[in-house]
Amino acid sequence: MRLAMEDDVPPNPGGVRLLGSAAVVPQANGCAHAIEQLRGARLHDDDDAIVLAWLAMQWHALEAMEAPAVPIPDNPNVTARFYAPDAEREGETIDLPPDEAAHLTRVLRLKVGAPVRVFNGRGGEFDSVVDSITRSRVQVRIDAAREAAAEPRVSVTLAQAVLKGDKMDDVVRDAVMMGVAAIQPIVTTRTEVTLASLQRGRRRERWERVAVASAKQCGRATVPAIGEPRTFGDVITALEHITLPGPGIMLVEPSAADGTLTLDELANAPPREATVLVGPEGGWTPDEVEQGSAACRIVTLGRRTLRADAVPIVALTALFAIWKEF
Image 1 (cartoon, one colour):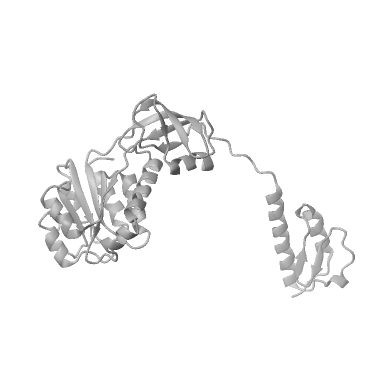
Image 2 (spheres, rainbow, N blue to C red):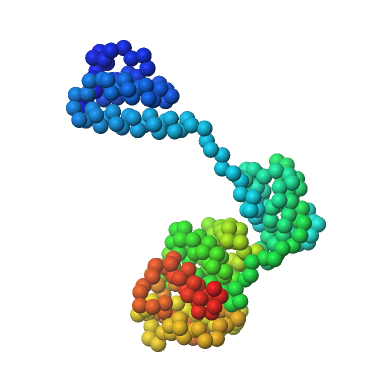
């Protein structure tokens, strides 16, 4: 494949040089003129015609890049929302946490006087105004309390076996969005991490940041507590001694145990609180199912085996539906 060689082509006032199968275009604003000149060049085969068409597309793309950007108008109905754990009373002026301050100044580029909303993670939400901005801090003035989004009537603690990689981040994000009251990470026989590695990696702090970001996005004023990771045995003991809310609902694979309950059998009397246990990628061991049955109702989500990271969102959706939270 070749385009006409440089010495085959007459002088080119548009500034386009054809060198073999390559073209050099000094500026995109000569797009139309350059294409017309190329059409007058001697094309030796169909491949050269394809190259010409490709070049034309590239130049049109360059012209589009040079076109003035169309400004996107601000949405006056959307008020930026920030996590402010110190927000308590109307009339106070408080500092935003560093991450939130950076989001306000560097991402949203808000100025002094901008209206914002803040929530304290404990159910309080307030209309506020940006009061001052310096290099090291952002202060907001709390104007008035506002009604926060309602929390579910059934307070659910999700006891989730720690999953591989970043999948646990996704579980925390989605569980907060669904409305859980707390998340208890657990280490089981088939979990691929240890309690010591979780502590060294400061995973709990990471999950707390994920929980704040999810509450901020979904409109909750409550940030669920993230418990210190515990072993499966410790969680069962806590359920037996009612230091974790009961009843316990242990989700298992369809063939994991005899006498499992279905979700329909949990619909009659919604509890005030519950702990939902979800296993790791490899599932529960038979010993864990037997141990869990002493403190939990053993429940299956149906005949299909779901991915471990899909189970929490499916289970919470189904439970909140049958408990008429939706």
